Amino acid sequence: MNRRHWLPIPIMAALLNLSACTPTRVDNPMNLITPPKDWHHAPDAQTRSNPADLKEWWKGFQDPKLNALLSQALANNHDLRSAIARVREAKAMTTVADSMLYPSIDLYSGGGREKKIDRIIGVPSDQGIRLFTPTADIISGGLSARWEIDLFGTRQLEAEAAAAQAEGAEQALHAAQVGLLAQVATHYLELRGIQKRTAILRKNIAIQQERLRVLKVFNRTGLTNQWDIARQESLVNTTAGALPTLKSAGSNLIHRLAVLLGEPPEKMQIRLAHAEPLPTNSPDIPRLLPSDLLEQRPDLRLAQTEVATMAARLGAARADLLPKLVLSASGGFGALASSGFSSIAESVYTLGSGLTAPIFNAGRIQAHITAADARLDQVAANYEKTFLLALEDVENAYVAHVSSLERRNRMTEAETAAEEAYRLVNGLYQHGASDYLSVLDAQRTKLAVADERAKAETEVYVALVSIYRAFGGGWVAEVSHQ
Figure (cartoon, rainbow, N blue to C red):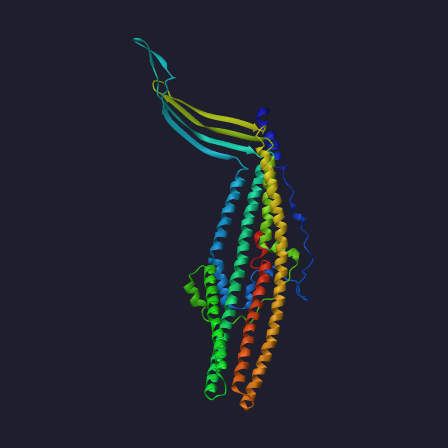
């Protein structure tokens, strides 16, 4: 074989080796964050958790109805479905970006008939030279290829940016899932708390009405006056006035849950309108280090992908200042048939290459570079801010949980004292040493304290959900790398 036929091989090898380097790559600025060693408000004497323990944290409540609601939400929620579609879209765009690294090969074919006045042919005849314009039939077909050699990594960086965007779409999906799980669990627990408070309020209204009845009886015998009756009527109406507010709040929570689960409100009303108690069990408090947030919180991982995307795009923008090399080739079959002449058929081919380099563009490329650099600064600042917000979120959740526990403990003690006061006054009444109104007052006080304890108990559960949401509970970080 002639030696010159081997010359393109080392040339192509050199081009491929050159295209593998990316001299315009930008260093990732995300390593500037130093997480604190521990939490300031974390509970003492608690073993460290594993991030994998966060995946199905809600099962710690041991509430089958809550489990069913969350499973349905994960399957039917419209925001999750939209996020899943965005992931599919982003992954498809990575294929588009990757394809620019390879040659493109197309099949082409064409044909037609043409007659042009500038093609006048003279043909001998009996009367001399006869002029005429022939009609030509042209047919062609074959393959064409084009390849832009990625000399300085422009296409590679664009592919990396698309891959980072696809990863960001997945993290946005995880963030939506974390938020959805927390919303459904919070609304469900609040609904059960309101239903419990509604039952307590109904009992309190009944006691107030009973006290009013007794006062009216006493008034007829001269043992009380009209002022006592008016005051008690006001108290009855005030207490009863809280009932519509609680019922409205409960209905609103059911309607919100219906939207989150993707079903009509009336169906959810049938499922949840029946009052049930708050769960008797709860998951353990998660205990992760601040550094774990970088892997577990989807919003932080999303911010990381935004930085990676903009860093790659800045490198690609800088590469626009460098030359670009394009190789092209085509080959196929062509045929020409003209009236009065023999048909011509031949195999045809073309080989070509082109090198372009920017000389003058009125600052367009440099402006693109400046804009890309500014966008990188924006997302880097957003990443740092997102991490600080995550730290704040966890600390606030810990504080809320501790304060709600303290309030629940106080209300439990108050409820025990109110129960004891009611027992004592009822015992005195049974022995004739106290009046019936004192018994009703003690019972009303006990119910008022029970209502506050129900609110405190609900707050404890809601604060626990907030802790899991702050840690990004609801998925496992390792899944995204599989």
